[in-house]
Image (tube, rainbow, N blue to C red; front, side, top):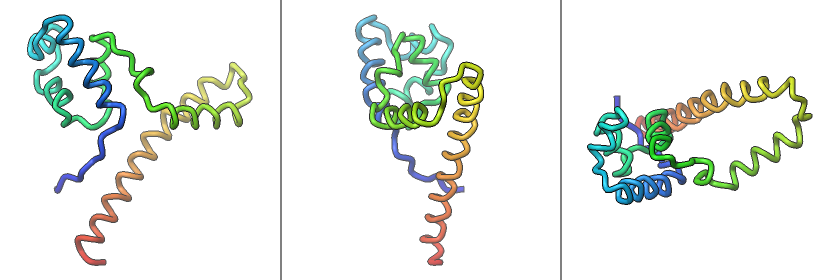
Length: 130
């Protein structure tokens, strides 16, 4: 099955720089960092060299070990838009917090998968000439 190009998440460059700075500041090699935090060397290497294009659970764990907050690195415009939508349509009732969070946790992966599938379908149509 062919691989499809995925655009890197925009916040990753900043997070990569922060992790590189962390390694330099603590005078620790990529391999030593991986061993110390029970990560694979390849996971750390792929992230630092830019091959990892999304915030995966492994990357989030790696950043947590380095005490790098992703909240400061997330692009503010999309977060702001989501927060405005929540504020406009959610009544703020404490008993609905879990429901709203659950909806976001279910919908985001489903929407991402559907979007990725539609891109693959469009690529297939281009390749086959349909």
